Image (tube, rainbow over all chains, first blue to last red; front, side, top):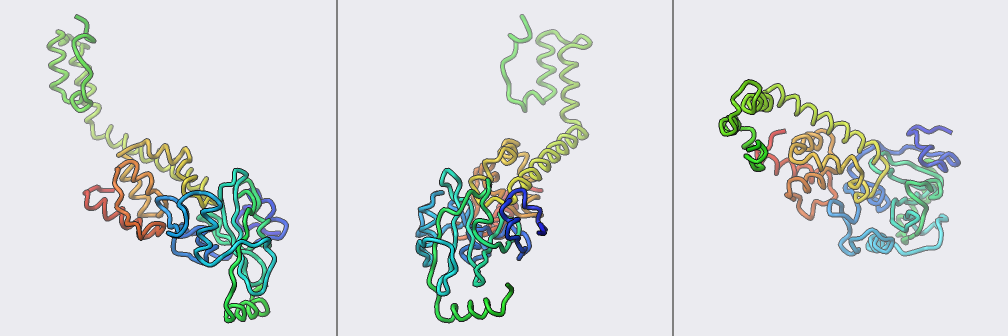
Length: 161
Length: 154
């Protein structure tokens, strides 16, 4: 299993399913923005970060849930692939402080922006369980439109596995 | 009368004026070789010496560089802005005070990153518009524009 970013020490579970680097590193956006499919701002409830005005400005799972709810996401029970839904996972430390977020791709794999480092594609949310990120604490999903479902089907069938 | 009893705590700027030391020297009769006046003249020459000033700036810049690199390394995978500014290296940069501002601006210009909390803490200014929060490029431009308006060179 290759480790092009040398991160197996930090995220040991990545070694199980491997990962693929899918972008260059940048400080222009972070994992929360990337989970929200944005790449132009750093999202965080902090005086220097962007934060949706509908969500409370504090570092709690409730505030992060509200931030994604403002984009149409609702809580769901797991991270299985559902054809008509796009899912995200919000990670939290053992103290319950949010640390990271990941988004499910049409293939069922997941994409994460690692801080200001690269975006990676990984097998499941569990692959990033670590001291740094804690573990997935909340899953959310939003229903896709017909066109998006068709696009996902096409991507899953003919896109990169 | 002892020397300590003759003077009171004085602002640094006054300490660095040679006449001030000469006056003390006269008052305490310290014009003898190796006395207060001679030592003060030596101190003044040292602190106003361009070589000493340049060297001090170099040391500060080297310290800043080490701290900035350390901070960048330790925050590579962090998303939390609250956590990254709590790190000791970031706090140490804030403690460098106003002298760190040109280094911060240079760093911001060459490899933009979230140095805004440090700049805010040191300068007590906040030139970033609410609508630009989180947008690294626009926040950087706002600070560099502010620095130019303040005639800060970096």
